[in-house]
Image (cartoon, rainbow, N blue to C red; front, side):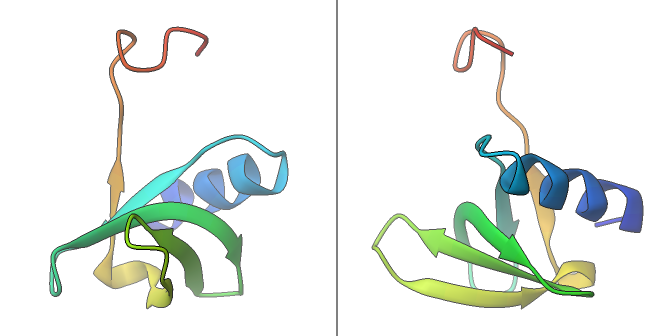
Length: 70
């Protein structure tokens, strides 16, 4: 993930909006809970918290049909 997308996801999460990321290395995805200078803390669908380096992650985008309020 590029730094500007990382910053965007962090801003969305801090504002209380849903932001999602995936980690291709372990095939997990989750909702971004918080950020540190270069890591995302996510909550996976299995309820586990993970801390991932942003450069190893990808943003998960949703369509307007999935999130019509955006």
